[in-house]
Length: 407
Picture: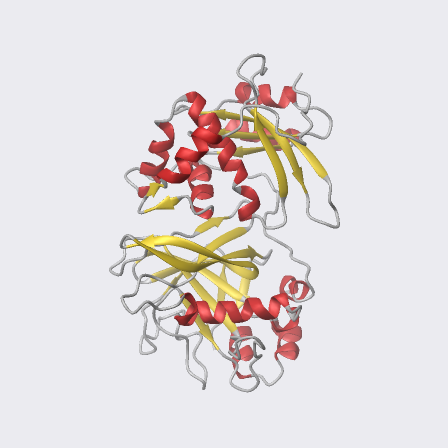
């Protein structure tokens, strides 16, 4: 039998039927117990011998999930938007609830119900029973691009608008493991095997075995990466470009307040992260637009001071512009640079070569944070959130926040 391996970044035929010999999704996942459903964003298959049971709901926990993010115009309405961040090694994935005239509950949808069951056993500490998650992007009809093997790191309730109606849904945080390829035979053995632990020990990638013990090896965690312009700004004519144009239309002062509100969204997206952030006063800010502190979760509980710049530009950010932020960093401080444009290759290479503690956020990154932070509705920035961000962002030192040096 020819090898059946999914490799990160490669596209695979998804014809939607077992009768197609060149299908590399449903056909590869077909066993005597059948295959996964041929449609939908959340697909899964149960173990047919001894599936783990969620004690709270009584539902089976699948042997594996196959999650699909649609990055193309679809025949069926899709009101949510996922975020795949290869730099941080995280995926924000929405569940499958949508507006229903029958007023269905969020976990009446099959995919949500199974995701919630998997999360319940995670919260119980039953990590050795957690199912692997395979994530794909659908960028053109008939093909899925493999983004990687993931584990479920967090699951929360969230709201979005569909047909003008508020809908309660689930929003999952997936951690992309440091795995370059996945053998489909491993997934099929998890469906038919009587002992999935034994199957994992024999066939699973090493990073998955570590994840079952609570040790998450994310791909590209905190790693710098040289990105092309096309990777830093939205595609021309896309919905993301229209969202970014809304941001570009803000005044410079409003954009600084907007960026502070954006940083305030990070703890929502990264559970356990504590922080405080404050805008600098307009006079004597020495080029710094905001500053604050991140506190890593317990038991590390280490505080990291940061300084930030927010530039509402269309032209590329050059090395000399980034170097001004670097020059103001003190010992142990971290830099955050936000722009509505993109960073030149040389600016990125200097950060990479000198290992400067600076994170560069481009226009596409800004849109991704807005999406992950539930700030987008019907293809636009939520006006209620934007109004509060601009009007209520503090322009003075918050109580309990010790100012960091910007000299």
